[in-house]
Image 1 (spheres, rainbow, N blue to C red):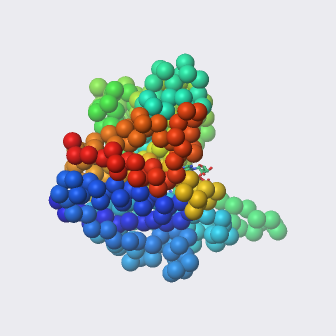
Image 2 (image 1 turned 120 degrees about the vertical axis):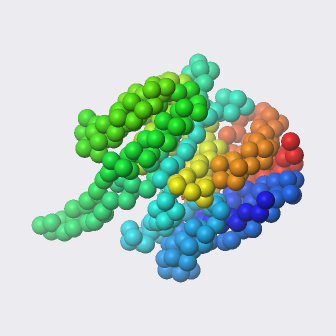
Length: 359
Ligand SMILES: NC(=O)C1=CN([C@@H]2O[C@H](COP(=O)(O)OP(=O)(O)OC[C@H]3O[C@@H](n4cnc5c(N)ncnc54)[C@H](O)[C@@H]3O)[C@@H](O)[C@H]2O)C=CC1
Ligand SMILES: CC(C)CC(=O)C(=O)O
Ligand SMILES: [Mg+2]
Protein backbone atom coordinates (compact mmCIF):
# COMPACT_ATOMS: atom_id res chain seq x y z
CA UNK A 1 0.00 0.00 0.00
CA UNK A 2 1.11 3.57 -0.63
CA UNK A 3 0.24 6.24 1.95
CA UNK A 4 0.98 9.96 2.18
CA UNK A 5 1.80 11.07 5.69
CA UNK A 6 2.04 14.72 6.71
CA UNK A 7 4.79 15.04 9.31
CA UNK A 8 4.83 17.83 11.89
CA UNK A 9 7.96 17.80 14.01
CA UNK A 10 7.09 21.00 15.87
CA UNK A 11 9.08 22.38 18.78
CA UNK A 12 11.11 21.25 21.80
CA UNK A 13 11.45 17.46 21.83
CA UNK A 14 9.12 17.21 18.80
CA UNK A 15 11.86 16.68 16.16
CA UNK A 16 13.67 14.08 18.31
CA UNK A 17 10.63 11.88 19.02
CA UNK A 18 9.16 12.17 15.50
CA UNK A 19 12.50 11.12 14.05
CA UNK A 20 12.34 7.82 15.96
CA UNK A 21 8.72 7.20 14.92
CA UNK A 22 9.62 7.79 11.26
CA UNK A 23 12.43 5.26 11.47
CA UNK A 24 9.90 2.75 12.80
CA UNK A 25 7.48 3.54 9.95
CA UNK A 26 10.32 3.15 7.43
CA UNK A 27 11.13 -0.30 8.79
CA UNK A 28 7.44 -1.28 8.67
CA UNK A 29 7.35 -0.16 5.03
CA UNK A 30 10.44 -2.27 4.29
CA UNK A 31 9.18 -5.37 6.13
CA UNK A 32 5.64 -5.32 4.74
CA UNK A 33 6.25 -3.86 1.26
CA UNK A 34 4.47 -0.54 1.79
CA UNK A 35 5.47 2.91 0.58
CA UNK A 36 5.10 5.85 2.92
CA UNK A 37 5.62 9.31 1.41
CA UNK A 38 6.32 12.02 3.99
CA UNK A 39 5.43 15.68 3.55
CA UNK A 40 6.98 18.07 6.06
CA UNK A 41 4.57 20.54 7.62
CA UNK A 42 5.61 23.55 9.73
CA UNK A 43 3.41 24.16 12.75
CA UNK A 44 3.88 25.81 16.14
CA UNK A 45 6.72 28.02 17.26
CA UNK A 46 8.95 27.00 14.35
CA UNK A 47 6.22 28.13 11.92
CA UNK A 48 5.87 31.45 13.75
CA UNK A 49 9.62 31.99 13.36
CA UNK A 50 9.56 31.03 9.67
CA UNK A 51 6.19 32.30 8.45
CA UNK A 52 4.87 34.58 11.20
CA UNK A 53 1.91 32.22 11.63
CA UNK A 54 1.66 29.00 13.76
CA UNK A 55 -0.19 27.21 10.94
CA UNK A 56 -0.22 28.90 7.53
CA UNK A 57 -3.20 27.85 5.40
CA UNK A 58 -1.02 25.96 2.91
CA UNK A 59 0.35 23.85 5.78
CA UNK A 60 -3.17 22.98 6.92
CA UNK A 61 -4.07 22.15 3.31
CA UNK A 62 -1.17 19.67 3.16
CA UNK A 63 -2.50 17.93 6.28
CA UNK A 64 -6.08 17.76 5.02
CA UNK A 65 -4.83 16.36 1.68
CA UNK A 66 -2.75 13.64 3.38
CA UNK A 67 -3.80 10.12 4.37
CA UNK A 68 -2.92 11.02 7.98
CA UNK A 69 -0.81 13.34 10.09
CA UNK A 70 1.96 12.45 12.54
CA UNK A 71 2.73 15.18 15.08
CA UNK A 72 5.40 15.60 17.75
CA UNK A 73 4.46 18.62 19.89
CA UNK A 74 4.45 22.40 19.77
CA UNK A 75 5.13 25.32 22.09
CA UNK A 76 7.86 26.67 24.32
CA UNK A 77 8.90 29.60 26.48
CA UNK A 78 10.25 31.51 23.47
CA UNK A 79 6.68 32.13 22.27
CA UNK A 80 5.00 32.69 25.65
CA UNK A 81 4.49 36.40 25.03
CA UNK A 82 3.03 35.98 21.53
CA UNK A 83 -0.64 37.12 21.55
CA UNK A 84 -3.25 34.31 21.93
CA UNK A 85 -4.36 33.98 18.29
CA UNK A 86 -0.73 33.63 17.11
CA UNK A 87 0.54 31.25 19.79
CA UNK A 88 2.04 27.87 18.80
CA UNK A 89 -0.82 26.04 20.53
CA UNK A 90 -3.32 27.99 18.41
CA UNK A 91 -1.76 26.32 15.37
CA UNK A 92 -2.55 22.93 16.89
CA UNK A 93 -6.12 23.93 17.70
CA UNK A 94 -6.58 25.18 14.13
CA UNK A 95 -5.16 21.93 12.78
CA UNK A 96 -7.57 19.81 14.86
CA UNK A 97 -10.54 21.96 13.84
CA UNK A 98 -9.42 22.16 10.19
CA UNK A 99 -9.13 18.37 10.01
CA UNK A 100 -12.47 17.99 11.80
CA UNK A 101 -11.01 15.44 14.21
CA UNK A 102 -13.54 15.70 17.01
CA UNK A 103 -12.76 12.40 18.74
CA UNK A 104 -9.49 12.09 20.66
CA UNK A 105 -8.75 8.62 21.97
CA UNK A 106 -6.23 8.55 24.84
CA UNK A 107 -5.50 5.13 26.33
CA UNK A 108 -4.34 4.75 29.93
CA UNK A 109 -2.90 1.27 30.04
CA UNK A 110 -0.03 0.10 32.16
CA UNK A 111 2.54 -2.13 30.54
CA UNK A 112 3.18 -5.08 32.90
CA UNK A 113 6.93 -4.35 32.66
CA UNK A 114 6.30 -0.89 34.16
CA UNK A 115 4.17 -1.80 37.18
CA UNK A 116 6.94 -0.58 39.52
CA UNK A 117 7.28 2.70 37.58
CA UNK A 118 3.76 3.75 38.57
CA UNK A 119 3.68 6.15 41.52
CA UNK A 120 0.61 4.29 42.82
CA UNK A 121 0.75 1.63 45.53
CA UNK A 122 1.30 -1.94 44.29
CA UNK A 123 -2.09 -3.00 45.69
CA UNK A 124 -3.83 -0.46 43.42
CA UNK A 125 -1.72 -1.21 40.32
CA UNK A 126 -2.31 -4.96 40.75
CA UNK A 127 -6.05 -4.46 40.25
CA UNK A 128 -5.23 -3.28 36.70
CA UNK A 129 -5.03 0.02 34.82
CA UNK A 130 -6.58 -0.24 31.39
CA UNK A 131 -9.03 2.41 30.33
CA UNK A 132 -9.57 4.86 27.50
CA UNK A 133 -10.40 8.53 27.68
CA UNK A 134 -12.57 9.60 24.75
CA UNK A 135 -12.09 13.35 24.69
CA UNK A 136 -14.14 15.80 22.62
CA UNK A 137 -11.45 17.68 20.70
CA UNK A 138 -12.82 20.58 18.66
CA UNK A 139 -15.37 22.25 20.91
CA UNK A 140 -15.68 23.67 24.39
CA UNK A 141 -13.63 26.35 26.07
CA UNK A 142 -10.53 25.93 23.87
CA UNK A 143 -12.65 27.03 20.91
CA UNK A 144 -14.93 29.63 22.53
CA UNK A 145 -14.33 33.35 22.44
CA UNK A 146 -11.23 34.47 24.35
CA UNK A 147 -10.77 38.13 25.25
CA UNK A 148 -9.30 40.48 27.78
CA UNK A 149 -11.15 43.78 28.22
CA UNK A 150 -10.31 46.82 30.21
CA UNK A 151 -13.00 47.35 32.85
CA UNK A 152 -12.67 50.39 35.09
CA UNK A 153 -8.92 50.38 34.72
CA UNK A 154 -8.32 46.69 35.35
CA UNK A 155 -8.07 43.83 32.87
CA UNK A 156 -10.96 41.36 32.87
CA UNK A 157 -10.47 38.12 30.94
CA UNK A 158 -13.20 35.92 29.46
CA UNK A 159 -13.12 32.44 27.92
CA UNK A 160 -16.38 30.95 26.68
CA UNK A 161 -17.26 27.26 27.00
CA UNK A 162 -19.94 26.34 24.50
CA UNK A 163 -21.37 23.00 23.34
CA UNK A 164 -24.26 22.24 21.02
CA UNK A 165 -26.39 19.13 21.45
CA UNK A 166 -25.09 17.83 18.09
CA UNK A 167 -21.45 18.21 19.18
CA UNK A 168 -22.15 16.29 22.37
CA UNK A 169 -24.10 13.59 20.59
CA UNK A 170 -21.38 12.79 18.05
CA UNK A 171 -18.70 12.32 20.72
CA UNK A 172 -21.18 10.56 22.98
CA UNK A 173 -21.78 7.98 20.25
CA UNK A 174 -18.01 7.39 19.97
CA UNK A 175 -17.93 6.84 23.73
CA UNK A 176 -20.73 4.25 23.59
CA UNK A 177 -19.27 2.53 20.50
CA UNK A 178 -15.84 2.37 22.17
CA UNK A 179 -17.36 0.85 25.32
CA UNK A 180 -19.23 -1.66 23.15
CA UNK A 181 -15.91 -2.92 21.75
CA UNK A 182 -14.47 -3.23 25.27
CA UNK A 183 -16.13 -4.07 28.59
CA UNK A 184 -19.44 -2.24 28.01
CA UNK A 185 -18.89 0.34 30.75
CA UNK A 186 -18.99 4.05 29.97
CA UNK A 187 -18.39 6.79 32.53
CA UNK A 188 -19.55 10.24 31.44
CA UNK A 189 -17.50 12.91 33.19
CA UNK A 190 -18.78 16.47 33.58
CA UNK A 191 -19.45 19.23 36.08
CA UNK A 192 -23.26 19.27 35.96
CA UNK A 193 -23.52 20.62 39.51
CA UNK A 194 -22.20 23.94 38.16
CA UNK A 195 -22.11 24.21 34.36
CA UNK A 196 -24.93 24.45 31.83
CA UNK A 197 -22.73 22.78 29.18
CA UNK A 198 -22.37 19.82 31.55
CA UNK A 199 -26.09 19.61 32.24
CA UNK A 200 -26.71 19.43 28.49
CA UNK A 201 -23.88 16.88 28.21
CA UNK A 202 -25.47 14.64 30.86
CA UNK A 203 -28.93 14.89 29.28
CA UNK A 204 -27.59 13.87 25.85
CA UNK A 205 -25.59 10.95 27.28
CA UNK A 206 -28.68 9.60 29.01
CA UNK A 207 -30.77 9.94 25.85
CA UNK A 208 -28.11 7.97 23.94
CA UNK A 209 -28.01 5.34 26.71
CA UNK A 210 -31.56 4.35 25.71
CA UNK A 211 -30.14 3.25 22.34
CA UNK A 212 -27.03 1.56 23.74
CA UNK A 213 -28.77 -0.70 26.26
CA UNK A 214 -25.83 -3.13 26.28
CA UNK A 215 -23.57 -0.41 27.73
CA UNK A 216 -23.76 0.54 31.41
CA UNK A 217 -23.62 4.33 31.68
CA UNK A 218 -22.49 6.05 34.87
CA UNK A 219 -22.03 9.76 35.59
CA UNK A 220 -19.16 11.28 37.52
CA UNK A 221 -18.28 14.85 38.38
CA UNK A 222 -14.87 15.79 37.04
CA UNK A 223 -13.33 16.69 40.41
CA UNK A 224 -14.34 13.32 41.81
CA UNK A 225 -13.01 11.62 38.65
CA UNK A 226 -9.59 13.20 39.16
CA UNK A 227 -9.56 11.63 42.62
CA UNK A 228 -10.99 8.23 41.54
CA UNK A 229 -8.31 7.83 38.83
CA UNK A 230 -5.72 7.75 41.61
CA UNK A 231 -7.81 5.87 44.18
CA UNK A 232 -9.22 3.08 42.03
CA UNK A 233 -8.32 3.27 38.33
CA UNK A 234 -9.50 -0.33 37.78
CA UNK A 235 -13.11 0.88 38.00
CA UNK A 236 -12.83 2.60 34.60
CA UNK A 237 -13.34 1.06 31.16
CA UNK A 238 -14.17 4.06 28.94
CA UNK A 239 -14.44 7.69 30.06
CA UNK A 240 -16.13 10.18 27.74
CA UNK A 241 -15.68 13.86 28.47
CA UNK A 242 -15.39 17.35 27.04
CA UNK A 243 -12.23 18.93 25.68
CA UNK A 244 -10.57 20.60 28.68
CA UNK A 245 -11.58 17.96 31.24
CA UNK A 246 -10.18 15.28 28.91
CA UNK A 247 -6.95 17.20 28.46
CA UNK A 248 -6.37 17.44 32.20
CA UNK A 249 -7.57 13.97 33.19
CA UNK A 250 -5.48 12.29 30.48
CA UNK A 251 -2.25 13.82 31.80
CA UNK A 252 -3.18 12.52 35.25
CA UNK A 253 -4.13 9.09 33.88
CA UNK A 254 -0.85 8.86 31.95
CA UNK A 255 1.24 9.33 35.07
CA UNK A 256 -0.27 6.38 36.92
CA UNK A 257 0.94 4.17 34.04
CA UNK A 258 4.54 5.29 34.64
CA UNK A 259 5.12 8.30 32.41
CA UNK A 260 3.36 10.72 30.10
CA UNK A 261 6.08 9.86 27.57
CA UNK A 262 4.52 6.40 27.03
CA UNK A 263 1.02 7.44 25.94
CA UNK A 264 -0.09 7.78 22.30
CA UNK A 265 -3.31 9.19 20.92
CA UNK A 266 -5.48 9.09 17.84
CA UNK A 267 -7.83 11.87 16.73
CA UNK A 268 -10.47 11.05 14.14
CA UNK A 269 -13.48 12.67 12.55
CA UNK A 270 -15.68 11.77 9.63
CA UNK A 271 -12.91 10.38 7.41
CA UNK A 272 -10.03 7.94 7.82
CA UNK A 273 -7.53 10.83 7.74
CA UNK A 274 -6.48 11.05 11.39
CA UNK A 275 -4.11 13.05 13.55
CA UNK A 276 -1.69 10.97 15.62
CA UNK A 277 0.33 12.49 18.44
CA UNK A 278 1.69 11.64 21.87
CA UNK A 279 -0.40 13.23 24.62
CA UNK A 280 2.47 15.23 26.10
CA UNK A 281 3.78 18.63 25.09
CA UNK A 282 7.12 19.83 23.76
CA UNK A 283 8.94 19.27 27.09
CA UNK A 284 11.31 22.25 26.76
CA UNK A 285 13.06 21.21 30.00
CA UNK A 286 14.60 18.16 28.28
CA UNK A 287 14.63 19.27 24.63
CA UNK A 288 17.81 18.73 22.61
CA UNK A 289 19.38 16.50 25.27
CA UNK A 290 18.47 13.06 23.88
CA UNK A 291 16.42 12.45 27.05
CA UNK A 292 12.88 12.24 25.69
CA UNK A 293 10.94 9.00 25.63
CA UNK A 294 9.84 8.49 22.01
CA UNK A 295 7.49 5.57 22.78
CA UNK A 296 4.31 7.71 22.96
CA UNK A 297 5.07 8.91 19.42
CA UNK A 298 6.08 5.47 18.15
CA UNK A 299 2.83 4.03 19.53
CA UNK A 300 0.93 6.93 17.92
CA UNK A 301 2.41 5.83 14.58
CA UNK A 302 1.18 2.30 15.40
CA UNK A 303 -2.30 3.72 16.01
CA UNK A 304 -2.10 5.42 12.59
CA UNK A 305 -1.33 2.05 11.00
CA UNK A 306 -4.23 0.40 12.84
CA UNK A 307 -6.99 3.01 12.66
CA UNK A 308 -6.30 4.97 9.46
CA UNK A 309 -4.46 2.50 7.24
CA UNK A 310 -6.15 -0.75 8.28
CA UNK A 311 -2.74 -2.32 8.94
CA UNK A 312 -3.44 -4.27 12.14
CA UNK A 313 -0.57 -6.74 11.73
CA UNK A 314 1.89 -3.91 11.21
CA UNK A 315 0.56 -2.09 14.30
CA UNK A 316 0.85 -5.29 16.34
CA UNK A 317 4.46 -5.65 15.18
CA UNK A 318 5.32 -2.16 16.46
CA UNK A 319 3.62 -2.77 19.81
CA UNK A 320 5.38 -6.12 20.20
CA UNK A 321 8.73 -4.47 19.48
CA UNK A 322 8.06 -1.93 22.25
CA UNK A 323 7.12 -4.76 24.59
CA UNK A 324 10.32 -6.68 23.79
CA UNK A 325 12.37 -3.53 24.37
CA UNK A 326 10.77 -3.13 27.81
CA UNK A 327 11.22 -6.86 28.55
CA UNK A 328 14.94 -6.47 27.85
CA UNK A 329 15.14 -3.88 30.64
CA UNK A 330 15.85 -0.72 28.67
CA UNK A 331 14.42 2.52 30.04
CA UNK A 332 14.57 6.21 29.17
CA UNK A 333 15.11 8.55 32.13
CA UNK A 334 11.40 9.16 32.77
CA UNK A 335 10.75 5.48 33.62
CA UNK A 336 14.21 4.52 34.87
CA UNK A 337 14.30 2.09 37.81
CA UNK A 338 17.05 0.23 39.71
CA UNK A 339 18.51 -2.66 37.75
CA UNK A 340 17.41 -1.34 34.36
CA UNK A 341 19.61 -0.06 31.53
CA UNK A 342 19.29 3.66 30.92
CA UNK A 343 19.07 4.78 27.29
CA UNK A 344 18.47 8.03 25.46
CA UNK A 345 15.82 8.86 22.87
CA UNK A 346 17.87 7.73 19.88
CA UNK A 347 19.11 4.50 21.46
CA UNK A 348 15.52 3.70 22.43
CA UNK A 349 14.60 4.06 18.76
CA UNK A 350 17.60 1.93 17.69
CA UNK A 351 16.60 -0.88 20.04
CA UNK A 352 12.92 -0.86 19.08
CA UNK A 353 14.02 -1.12 15.44
CA UNK A 354 16.15 -4.13 16.34
CA UNK A 355 13.18 -5.84 17.98
CA UNK A 356 10.82 -4.97 15.11
CA UNK A 357 10.20 -8.03 12.94
CA UNK A 358 7.53 -9.15 10.51
CA UNK A 359 4.91 -11.29 12.26
N1 LIG B 1 0.16 18.55 21.81
C1 LIG B 1 1.00 19.56 22.05
O1 LIG B 1 1.72 20.01 21.16
C2 LIG B 1 1.09 20.09 23.43
C3 LIG B 1 1.88 21.17 23.66
N2 LIG B 1 2.06 21.64 24.93
C4 LIG B 1 3.02 22.73 25.08
O2 LIG B 1 4.27 22.17 25.47
C5 LIG B 1 5.01 23.12 26.24
C6 LIG B 1 5.47 22.48 27.54
O3 LIG B 1 4.34 22.17 28.34
P1 LIG B 1 4.41 21.42 29.73
O4 LIG B 1 3.29 21.92 30.54
O5 LIG B 1 5.77 21.48 30.27
O6 LIG B 1 4.01 19.90 29.38
P2 LIG B 1 4.88 18.74 28.73
O7 LIG B 1 3.94 17.61 28.50
O8 LIG B 1 5.66 19.23 27.58
O9 LIG B 1 5.93 18.33 29.89
C7 LIG B 1 5.51 18.02 31.20
C8 LIG B 1 6.62 17.19 31.88
O10 LIG B 1 6.65 15.89 31.29
C9 LIG B 1 7.92 15.61 30.75
N3 LIG B 1 7.75 14.92 29.48
C10 LIG B 1 6.85 15.22 28.50
N4 LIG B 1 7.02 14.42 27.45
C11 LIG B 1 8.03 13.59 27.75
C12 LIG B 1 8.68 12.53 27.06
N5 LIG B 1 8.31 12.15 25.82
N6 LIG B 1 9.70 11.89 27.66
C13 LIG B 1 10.08 12.24 28.89
N7 LIG B 1 9.52 13.23 29.61
C14 LIG B 1 8.49 13.91 29.03
C15 LIG B 1 8.60 16.97 30.56
O11 LIG B 1 9.99 16.86 30.58
C16 LIG B 1 8.01 17.79 31.71
O12 LIG B 1 8.75 17.58 32.87
C17 LIG B 1 4.05 24.30 26.45
O13 LIG B 1 4.40 25.28 25.53
C18 LIG B 1 2.68 23.72 26.15
O14 LIG B 1 1.75 24.67 25.71
C19 LIG B 1 1.48 21.04 25.99
C20 LIG B 1 0.67 19.96 25.81
C21 LIG B 1 0.35 19.44 24.51
C1 LIG C 1 -3.83 22.92 22.68
C2 LIG C 1 -3.01 21.90 23.43
C3 LIG C 1 -1.72 22.46 23.89
C4 LIG C 1 -3.85 21.23 24.45
C5 LIG C 1 -3.21 20.07 25.14
O1 LIG C 1 -2.56 20.19 26.14
C6 LIG C 1 -3.44 18.72 24.65
O2 LIG C 1 -4.15 18.51 23.67
O3 LIG C 1 -2.93 17.78 25.27
MG1 LIG D 1 -2.55 18.35 27.31
